[in-house]
Length: 228
Image 1 (spheres, helix red, strand yellow):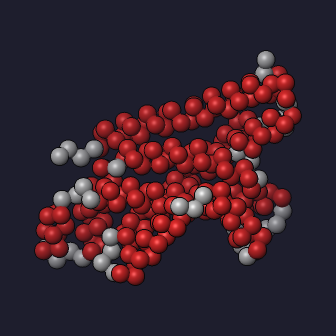
Image 2 (cartoon, rainbow, N blue to C red):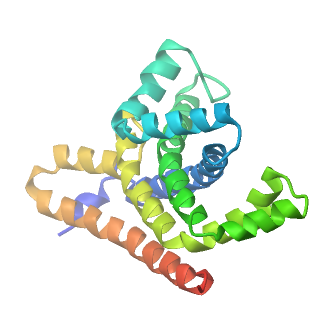
Image 3 (cartoon, rainbow, N blue to C red):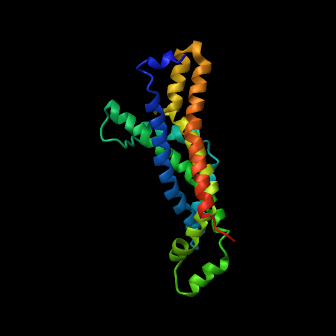
């Protein structure tokens, strides 16, 4: 029934491994950049607040497809930004892989930022005031008092962001990154007699990736949630 998988050109495991790598590196970068952004958004410095607010509003409301295309056509083709070491075929693939990650980080970090900002709002104001009364500066209050509690409060929303990121990695196919949806498109073109099986195969593949991730992050959210 799945005889078409014998085709050596169909690297199913490799395609899903690429999806996992895109998700993993983009998730790490998004958490780091999103945390920096939320620090800017609650900063007492007006310029930093303005930058954080403008960035979040612009990138969050820009379609992800546009951002990913810009990383390819804008940054690579127009500006000549190459994140790989050479211009060989393998290096070009690596370059588009890294540019895709950059695009995912730029987009997903805005949702991480807003999730964390909602978590910051759950931290009692008195704790920050007490920390300032002890002589702690803004960065110390944010990193030592506020953000640890904010992260614990928003594990569930962050889990939803990460699950959405995993599914959003399919957009990387438009710039030629060889992840699952690109392979599915190739199979759809070549295996017209097995379209239902192709769709079922990739649907099951994404369920296998998404379901354990959701269960794991849901368990973590329950373990570390703040009791109020």
